Image (cartoon, rainbow, N blue to C red; front, side, top):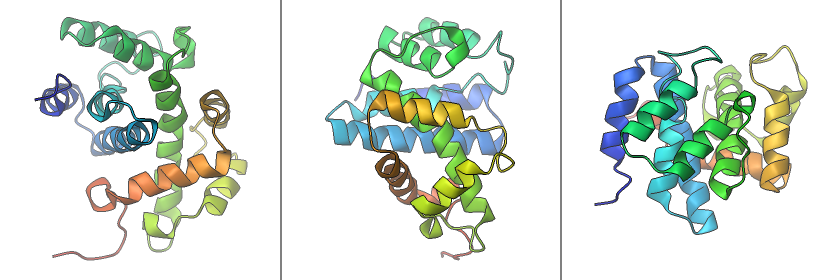
Length: 193
């Protein structure tokens, strides 16, 4: 058994998060983090748990004074290691915690973009991520009125800090989410038995 127990992390997530949309966001970021860990030769379980738990306290403690500070204390009490705690603190620019590890930089680069790709998917006629293209995401990023709460600055800064090509990163996140489309509610109008 991995020391990064997904079921334990899932239990913690569900203890503090009830909203279906926030749970799906957690699963989405977990999926993208696992795929990046695979690409970078890192621990997929560790990276997955980091993605799964990055916002676990947000619904209960939504203010900038509380999130992710309260969650970090809870995670520390549960024995999560500093690298995970630092990555989660670093995903919110206002904490002042620098993103110095590949884990932290990847989490920051994936968090807002994953949420944005959900929004782009939901406005597709099919509501399927299979119909989402890099070009569509890029075009919607330029539309400040679309998914206005998503920080374009954070998305750009994340891509820059991770040192990846913008289009390749967007495609990577789309492809990672496609693998779990049904589970994430991104499969669209396709009916499955």
